[in-house]
Structure formats: structure tokens, C-alpha cells
Image (cartoon, rainbow, N blue to C red; front, side, top):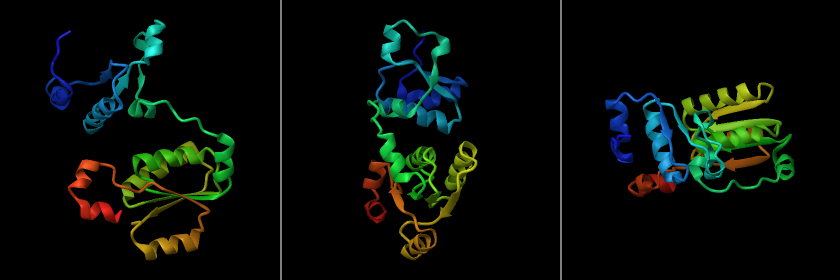
Length: 195
């Protein structure tokens, strides 16, 4: 197999070689490596998949049909946390739940998880109309009967937030609205401390 470059060359290689799909064939790759590959592929609209974990390789269970989509655990590369389903169901089931940053990657995933517990109302609040719209479409497709209220607002606007809280009266709030690119925000301290 010819080596065409390293991870830093991936964007160029995809373009020059007209790559149609990327397979992460290193089951022990760090979460950072998997995230870098995923980011490049998403920007280029190239599908990407990964090999099964080491335990499956050792067991000899790998063939081309065992390639799978990259999931959240691949991006984190840590042991998934055990969830107390009863506790979560009690906390959010049947309640009005507000998620800030609902259009971001963490907020959107949290909304998916909360929706499973059938809150009385799931309030998706975010600053970007497109990301909130996409989150709403996804939740509506997965849970068509779930009451959803999308809110496009800046969490720093206290008057707007007061209005949201007064009108919708959320009982549980998950705050996920935040900047996530630390090096960039370190160069823009004024903006990072206001969020």
C-alpha cells in the first residue's frame, strides 16, 4: 500500500486523489486523531467510517462488512459513562426541559437523549437559526409526537431570556451554549468571557 502522506495532508489528498470515502483503519487511534479526520471529511462532505475496536480484531471478527460509522465514543476514546436511567427519567420525563446551545454538537446530542425520556416540552434554545432548525427537524423525525419549542436567542440577552422563562416556565435547564475551540478563544478573550 502506497503511503500518500500524514494526517495533515488528508485534506489535500482527498482533493487531489478525488477520494470518495475515508476509512479510519487504526482501531487504537486517539479521539483527537478521529476528530481531525472527521472534521476534514465533514468539510469536504466525504463519508467516513472506522474499524471495529481492538477486542473485535483480537477475536478475528473483522471483515469489510464490519466497518461502521464513527460514533461519539470513537470521538472521545474513553469508556462510556454508565447512566442511571431511572434517575434521568425522573429528572426530565414529563417536565418542561430547556437546553441552551441546542444547535451545537453537545446540545443537539443532549436533546436527542432527553427526547427519549418524553419531557412534557423540549425547548431548544440557540443563537443560530440554521443549527436550531436542523436540531428541530432531527428531533421531530425521531420523536414526532414530542412537543418541541425552538427558540432563537442569544443567552446573553437577559430580557429575552426572562421572557422565555416567564412564558415557557422550564423546570429543568441544561446549559450547553459555549465556545469549544480553546486555542481560538484564548486569542479572543473578550468574547470568550462573555459567553
